[in-house]
Image 1 (cartoon, rainbow, N blue to C red):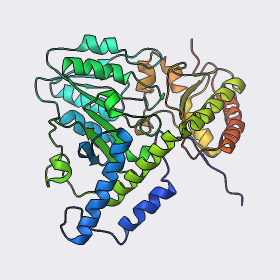
Image 2 (image 1 turned 90 degrees about the horizontal axis):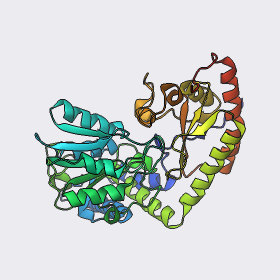
Image 3 (image 1 turned 90 degrees about the vertical axis):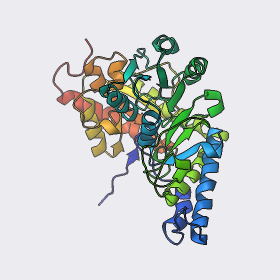
Image 4 (image 1 turned 60 degrees about the horizontal axis):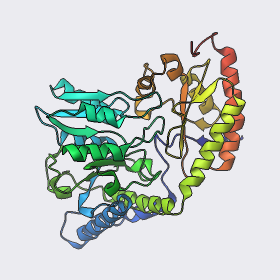
Amino acid sequence: MTVMRRIYMDANATTPLLPEVLEAMRPWLLENFGNASSIHQPGQQARAAVERARTSVARLLNCRESEVVFTSGGTESDNLAIFGLIQSGDHVITSSIEHHAVLHAAERLRDRGIEVTFLPVSSDCRVDPDEVRRALRSNTKLISVMMANNETGIIQPIEEIGKIAQEADIWFHTDAVQAVSKIPVDIQAIGCDLLSLSGHKIHAPQGTGVLYVRRGTKLEPLFFGGTHERQRRAGTENVAGIVGLGKAAEIAAQSLAEGKVVQLAALRDRFEAEVLACVEGTGVNGAGQPRVPNTTNLYFNNLEGEALVIALDLKGIAVSGGSACASGAAEPSHVLTAMGLPPERARASLRFSLTKLNTQQDIDDALQIIPQAVSRLRELAPVNAGTLG
């Protein structure tokens, strides 16, 4: 029996654990099981491992070790940044294309009576810094705009927004979950006060994350218990997971320094160009804008994207119709509709996101399978389904 070769092209949903990361974690999953808050030797060994990982993350972000708060992932980091700062009477500015971890948190604030401005975006998925400036009010407390969009990969003008926040003396948070390890992320250049990242998007284990908190930022914790993470995040540290995140941060920093993301971008560009060349009625959502190097969001007229996701999965290719957190939703992508795409084109769009483990052979095989799958689905689809008017 022949085993189907699988091609994973959904890195923006999650990435595989790198072998080096697993090896770094292994001792802390088995023999080194101390609580990092204990004063005995096993506990202090665990504490030292946590602090080494904190140093690795700080180096990747160009910040102080004391400003790195370990969390359970990007969602917790986003929620801590938002709910940890906002109080009654405050005003929050965010965008309409944020990940649901930010978007739904902001909606919950709005439901509680907090003023929230959801900024529109251009047709190419960019937030206009001038829109941020115009949205400022006397009671604006926080601006939260993502660094790179999880569905299109479009990079936002974060440094410009950071300057606006600094000039207005307003806290600035950016969800950098889809940017860290793909592009250089320098806290000092960005000028943000808070930044979120997720371990499983950079080849670390799921259930790990970081919130960067600039020194002097007064943040109320979400959890109450011990004094962990300088009283910003109570709970016994996930030592093995944190060690894995630290190792992944080291690998990411080395990859960026060696320019390996350029190779990843070349793979993505070749894949994108050849799909557009050999499949009619296709295009790139957000074409022409700066993107993270691994991501392309393509539309395929005259079909339903969900049907293509299933068809490709049956052929061994894993892709996504958008955010993994929204898979199975009846409504089209909130990101693509915010860009002004009609519902039928949004539903005809797929996200292809590569990991650093993808190869030229993966691209070759995918380019053999995808045109055939699209052609077959279009033959079966009702006339005009998914077509722009």
